[in-house]
Image: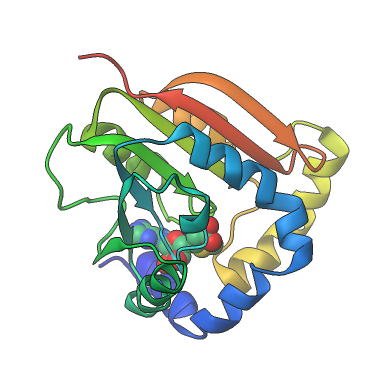
Length: 208
Ligand SMILES: C[S@@+](CC[C@H](N)C(=O)[O-])C[C@H]1O[C@@H](n2cnc3c(N)ncnc32)[C@H](O)[C@@H]1O
């Protein structure tokens, strides 16, 4: 495992319950809940949830999907599996590096990335892996915080980025829509909100 990835894992292994509580707050629900619902409306069939974390997206997925969640942090996955069960749902969880998925080609009907391309050391490699394991034409959806398209906001993000990377391995200046496009995903729509700090990118895996 690379040093940057070891560091990411170390950070997320610290206190998964605290992450889960913070990300379940009313404020977070106000900021992200509507788009998490849209992610849920986009996916179907066999869904790969990359950077599954504590499974916060699970309640938004339709009841008839089968969810496979992968994450580099076993402790996040442990909380996630329990949370899914509390929601009356099931998720198959696997400890795995998103940049090197130990999964076969072209098996998933949908691939979802929720708030993880900001921490994955090489986001383009992870997006390419998502494309590789997706069936041709599969739904690919990315709910991410990104470098805003609004310059004053982007400059603020540039200012806080060094501290956030140092403390949380959380990158605030990634041009995620470009990364996703370069990975081979056919981008169909980009929904920008919160002054462009968040993007919901909906696309599909290329037809073979
Ligand atoms: C901010 S959390 C998001 C969790 C969840 N998707 C959510 O919506 O709340 C980012 C997650 O990505 C995981 N992660 C970061 N780099 C990874 C990698 N290379 N492979 C797999 N998981 C990774 C972290 O362990 C963490 O659980």
